[in-house]
Image (cartoon, rainbow, N blue to C red; front, side, top):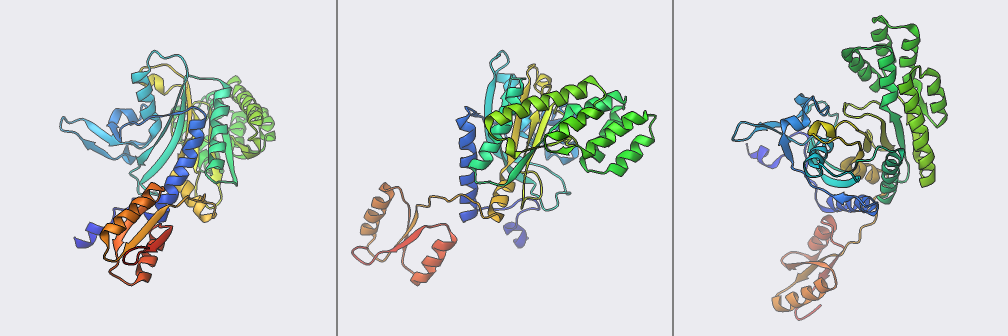
Length: 395
């Protein structure tokens, strides 16, 4: 029992000292760029009613939710995903608003799964949502803002891979796949399991041309030329329209000057079923998975009572911090933490500490009770920029 009191459960961890200072600094730098685009902060509850994240909404599977009950017997869940919470909030407080809304947020989310491969169950996320704008300009703004925010946080080498869920859904609809088959195929496509996808489709009564189009999705990734190749397999208006939308968005991203960070991947299909159009993920080296994900979700807010198109993204702050740390690209922090070690003259020590605090230093006072090297070591381990040893009567 004694050991359990000082250990954390699997999937969560303590963060402190320089590591936490780096995390806070990166959050600030990333958030500064969102604010520069006019996005306003919003805070939603850490837990919500189960229905906000139900299968009907198309978010996290029920088995991956942390569920509990309130005193009235209502089923509540710890938030696994911010987007449904923002959608609920927009429907509640901005029901009659017709001008686009821009929100950004920061907080922790919770996923209850054992298949994490070293990932945390509690993570910090920051993101943005643009509600009420169905235009290609809105898609481009979201992707360009993500690129600029990643650059502002210190990341230099990364790519934002852009897809279009409607391209895949159009092929599925043209092949007349039932919902169960489409879901199974989505799993194979998402895991790049071409053999599994082929076996699944050959067991169905599907025209050979449709099978070829569906299997081709796995090879449709790379530069802008991929979109021309995709049109060769786009045997239906919905898929062709999806490709045209990607072309429009890419032209706008060139105007933003971020096109060098963009690639395309039409096999990108999210586990969240609420996405309806352009989707994207940001990747960098020294990170095991995408550090940011986003896309268009035009039908989600309607489930909460307000009809409004929307797009957004989320960045996994912990993964971004890990990548920047491993790449040795964490932005420099202005460290004004000062350790003031005094002997017996407490009155003079208080006066000195006050002077430093007025100069903007976060000043900790400690009485000298150990060898000086112990305080120097302590300062180095706990994010102090310098140590000042006071002699009796002054510095």
